[in-house]
Image (cartoon, rainbow, N blue to C red; front, side):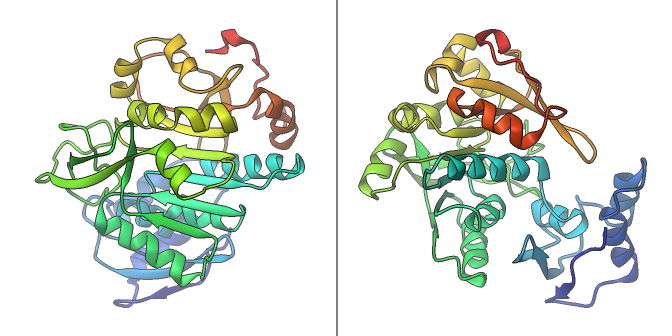
Length: 322
């Protein structure tokens, strides 16, 4: 696989980083690829180089000092399996004759939001931390994404001003409204700042956002509050949901049944398992570990199965699949 052309914005690209980027885009290497890339450019101590690179027909502007951008630079995308699922979800909705509205709760630097802006009718991101919020806005403006918007706030279950604990280090996606959050590799948190939190259902109504078809929730331990805040939207719209469920969220929910009740009747709940260059969906067993969940409305199950193919879709569609 040939890497997309790059434009370095702050300094020339050293040869070792050019080699690392080439290696990261190869799919034929059986193993050791990530080890070599990380040795050539350690993600915990990268050079502060800014770049612009092709990204699924769009332009992606980032910096190697940010881990998510680092991943895009060396591998082409961050969590590519999630992008595949979200893209297929949009196709399923279009095939059913529905307009596609996407919500990105915890938009970070706008990676998923930018990707989905080309595949949906309307896209809305929510990100309370200004440094990454500004990066998300920059990406949308660079690509003239008139159908996408980012709100400088978090979604929750009550309107409030709450303490947000920003991350330390290059992984800028691990800031949290939960103190001492560390499951995302962010053992050290910066001094708290105050951010605005809005009730999801109320904001969706106030902004006259249409029928929501897809929601991504990645909020570093605050997901239970987000789900409670968009409870009416979930029941009314029955969207696809991509959810990072943390140990904190598991403890707040307390049981598999309460997790099911957070969505809508007959929701199909799967765990996303990432492999090297592939992924699969499998039954989710309620537990304490960090897990990527994909929630599918029952009426879209067959369509998604056809879209993904049987090798990626494990047809455990009973209520016992959780």
